[in-house]
Amino acid sequence: MNTPQHVAIIMDGNGRWAERRGQTRTTGHRKGVEAVREAVRSAGELGVKYLTLFAFSSENWRRPEDEVNDLMGLLKFFIRRDLAELHREKVRVRIIGDRRTLKPDILSLLTEAEDLTRANDALELIIAFNYGGRDDITRAARLLAAKAARGEIDPGSISEDSISSSMDTAGIPDPDLIIRTSGEQRISNFLIWQAAYSEFVFLECLWPDFNRAAFEDALREYGNRNRRFGSVAERDLALGS
Image (cartoon, rainbow, N blue to C red):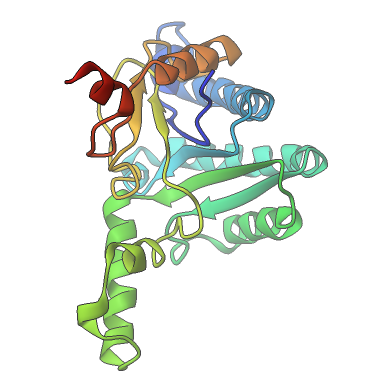
């Protein structure tokens, strides 16, 4: 199977999973944490080198305060409970997103996770937290504009590469495959610069039901795709198409 190097996942459907069972949205989010563990484990076993999870968007702050507080609590719980195991499994944790407005306790936990696992190389787990694609591009543009204003760079020299290297995902290859659960078919402001040539697989299962079998289904679908990157694939040339 042609395994993608970098898989990114929009983890959607926790609330609907809970509502269909007459349970609280918090219960759905807790079940979703179990699916996160399964996804990380499966990624490593299936040969994926980079796994990006859309954990909390910059728009999610608009949700009810109780739900936001529950999500923050689950993030703390996940890091405190799973960080040691991730480190033992040689998983490197990296956080992308705007950190400027995060509370000190959240920020310190994220920093601890990155610092502890920095030298690990079995799997890179990228957690998109307080992340928005447009915000990522905006902050990169501001960074380059500030450098130009200081005379450090020529504005005319700004390129796609210099923009990419100024974004949160600098040094991380663009995602080969983006998976979204719950049957929704939109990108929701996730990695919109980096996803220019990504393949998309939309799964009907809700995120708490995502398991290794679902992961393998998505990878098989990816393996059947003909990636061109704006050019013509070799097999198309052979067929004269």
